[in-house]
Length: 348
Ligand code: NAD
Ligand code: UDP
Image 1: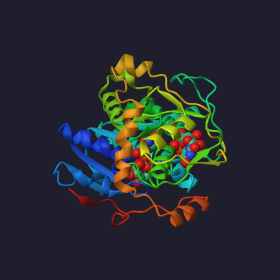
Image 2: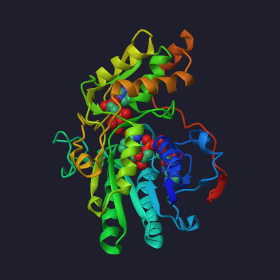
Image 3: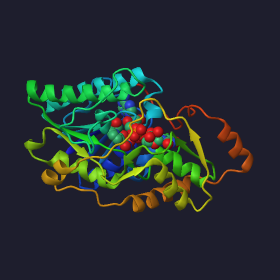
């Protein structure tokens, strides 16, 4: 049994990762500031005496954590709506979070995995994206806080490996979806699913011909664990994602079909710097981790719709109309706040 720190452990991916690590018999510390995550994501695990939930911010040194064998650094908002809400904070979280987990890893000799992103590639000129492609990222657009923050974190990881011998792993995660995504997350699958189930128009940005490749969360978490457990040859960035590529218009149709309600589409402007297409080349993960996704998009969407169906009742027509005319940013995030600015034990 290893003692493992998961920063961002109350988030969408983090909570699924905590569950898998607990199932493997490990002692898990989930550190989170609940900026976009919620304690509810861990509710099924809180009775387990091998999980500790700590209120804490990765922007602060992690001295109170104690020795750990492995660190998964997932703490960072991932939805464009959420990370653009306070871009300076997003940059701080990416860089200082990486710095603090690397310092902790250096102190206790832990292996540390960074949750990097396909955003490293920006709006790519190379398709599908291989790890050797250096990307096409705007350093000043609205997505830069996230893209450049994650790029700086990757650079810092490599520098700690070279300068201090820290044992690093870097997962370049492509669009991931599944149960426990928040209703107000703002990313495409949660938006479309919630809108379709409520009988509201689906907000399609641009002409819908832009593509993404969606990975079901269970597959992604299996990949993260495989990468963490891989040998020293994998101290280099590794794509994790599902190469099944769809246009966003097709995604809207599939989700509308699963909702069982009539499909209504509301066209909205394409956000600035929205990548035109995205698909991972996963040859490296297949060859060195023996990993590939197993859950098809249709099956993953079906499971995800069940999650949202339990949360979303169709709205009355008057409410629907009011909501649809209110285009603009989502309201501030919901959910309880963990007590105190300093790390403190919440559940164990
Ligand atoms: P999420 O927003 O659900 O989870 C992020 C978690 O980090 C939340 O619980 C949030 O409260 C916490 N957090 C944010 N800032 C923090 C801070 N300063 N200190 C402590 N906790 C903090 O997002 P997710 O989809 O689960 O993403 C997890 C990680 O994976 C992120 O680092 C993200 O960049 C990366 N990633 C996700 C995707 C995806 O499609 N889901 C794609 C690429 C990369
Ligand atoms: N998108 C959309 N409607 C929405 C949310 C997103 O059409 O309500 C589009 C968005 O413009 C992008 C794609 O869906 O082309 C994926 O967006 P998301 O925010 O999920 O993640 P991204 O991959 O852009 O970071």
